Image (cartoon, rainbow, N blue to C red; front, top):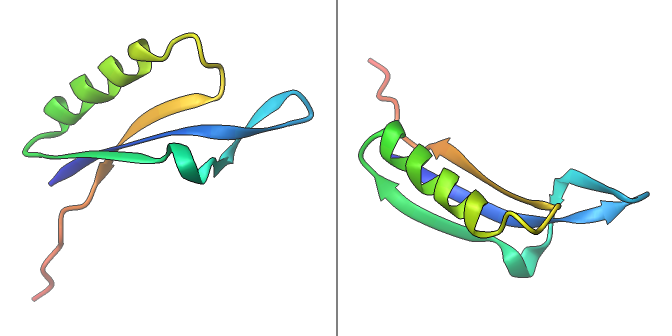
Amino acid sequence: MWFVFEAEYEIEDRKANWNKPVRDTIAWHGPFATEKEADEVALARMWAKIDLYAHKARTVDMTAKVEA
C-alpha cells in the first residue's frame, strides 16, 4: 500500500531544511495499489507547486510485512 507525503519545509540559512516539514502544510494522498500510481501522483503534486522552492512530495511504502 503506497501513499504520497507532501509538505513545505522550514527555511534555515536561506536553504530548505528537508527534515523540518511545516506542520500546517502536511498532506497525505492515497492509498495507492502500486508504487507507479503513487509516483505519478507525487510527480503531479510537485509540478502543481513548482514555484515553491521548499515544497516536496514523495512516495511512502506503508505495506505491512508479515513475519512467520
